Length: 113
Image (cartoon, rainbow, N blue to C red):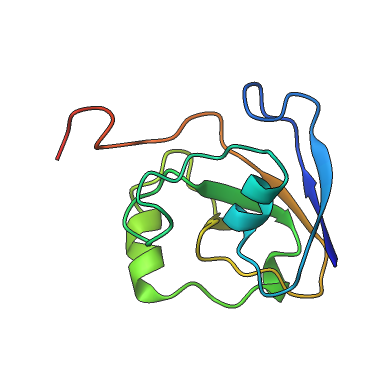
């Protein structure tokens, strides 16, 4: 199991958390399996940015984002150089520290297309 430190998020995880995730699991699935209800409007199909996270430690150990993910990340609120879509970032053996951004952009929920 790989450790993920989740930094405090005012709504989803106010105290922060330390979770254990099996290698080969997406960060999104790992969060959901540990009762951290990160938004995932496209049902983890890499079609939105609602599961955007910032990798604070361990970014270099993740496989590189593909072109589709990179294009979507350009639309994410609070984009940083170590941003990833948690549905696409697969946990390996290296511990990670992640931050869930304060806001998310959900085009469907906000009535935009």
